[in-house]
Amino acid sequence: MKIAQFSRFGFILAAAGSAVGLGNIWKFPYITGEYGGGAFVLVYLLTVAFIGFSIMIAEMFIGYEGKKDCVTSFETLAPQKKSLWKLAGFQGVSGLLIMTFYSVVIGWILNYIVTSFTHLPASVEEAQNIFMGMLKSDPYTQIFYHSVTAIIVTFILTKGIKGGIERLNKFLMPLLMLILGGMFLYALTLDGFSKAWNFMFAFDFSKLNSEAFVTAVGHAFFTLSLGMGAIMTYAASMQKGTNLVKSALWVVFLDTTIALIAGLMLFTFLYQYGATPSKGPGLVFISLPSVFYEMGILGNIFSVLFFIALAFAGLTSAVSLVEPMVQYFIDRFTWSRLKASVLMGSFFYVIGLVALLSNIDGFSSALTFGSKNLFDWLDFVTAAILLPLGGLVMAIFVGFVVPKSQVSALLEPQLGKFFTPWYFSLRYITPIAMFIVILNLIGVF
Ligand code: PHE
Image (tube, rainbow, N blue to C red; front, side, top):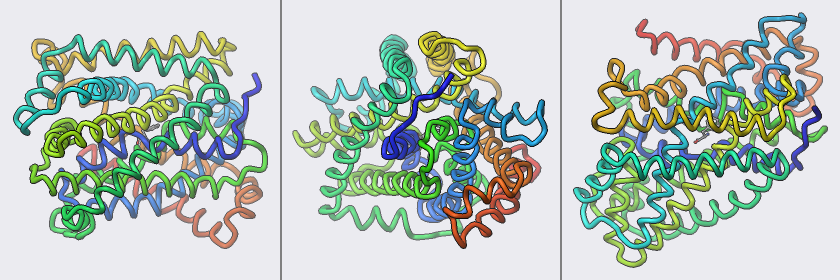
């Protein structure tokens, strides 16, 4: 089946919409807090610039040249027919796995939009009780909002690339930037800003251990949506003649800028109002609401706007997490888009329910395996293992398997004198770095 195409601008917005997500606004600030700030941010920025950007181009290349779902694109580009490389296309499954807990978190956000209108917690303790109460003993609220999220995402997917995904991004991305930009400008006027700046950009390497390093690299993949076929699937719908390198530059630029803006803004608020940044996933759900309380009525407005921006960021990423497998079933099994979307939606919805229950007292012991419960395992296995692995596979595929002549025919005119360093990075630097990350994860050192 022929895939509908993005407009050029629509592609950049959709790919940026995929990249800019909960990873930027929820995850990046709290892991930066957890791993001590500056040095962590530096490793993340270096990974984005030297590895993430190279892989983004490679991933776009596979999609643009393959023009179909990920499995078919790998199959088409592999020089031998019937090659096992098509298995690499199943990286789309990682997206569905991410979506299981991603949908639950978007649900928390929707809940916070509603409650912020009327109530903000007067202290960090109260905020902590509210969040933990929801997380650990209120399955009903979580299930309700997880269901709302699953329905919205599935509905958009049924509308396809143009009428669903492109439209959603054209509408939500500008609003997201407007809200975050406005709140950032306000943060700039506060004294806490310089403390936040120091926290994020004072590079103290004594705080950098190997776990922080691996997390920073894994996060660079997660935040750029690399290694699970989202960018590849979108690139399959690029218009002929679109410049891949410029598009990748835009996406990386927007994603990084928005993560830094979100981080600076959040830490400014936290320092300004003297809240101790709660470590971990509760940062935006615990510390931040109690800071908003301190701002009075402005705080209610900020809180609602902030969680709306977060929900928008989450939704534009969510559709890209599921689209690769939807496209796969459309292309390979000639399913209708409606059938593919509903079945994929049901898949992540059901596993998401179980993930959600793994946080609930009374269920959690049955759903905890070793050191983590199901929810945390899904996050860890996807962000830390599957995405870097997907990136490694793509780097090797474009660097060694696809004939160099084919790669350079498309990309040399676009990259100019940067073609050689890019190709070198793809063949050697990226695989070695990814290999180290994976060895580290499985505990070799
Ligand atoms: N990049 C998204 C974020 O930062 C998450 C994501 C990962 C989306 C992989 C698509 C693919 O939240």
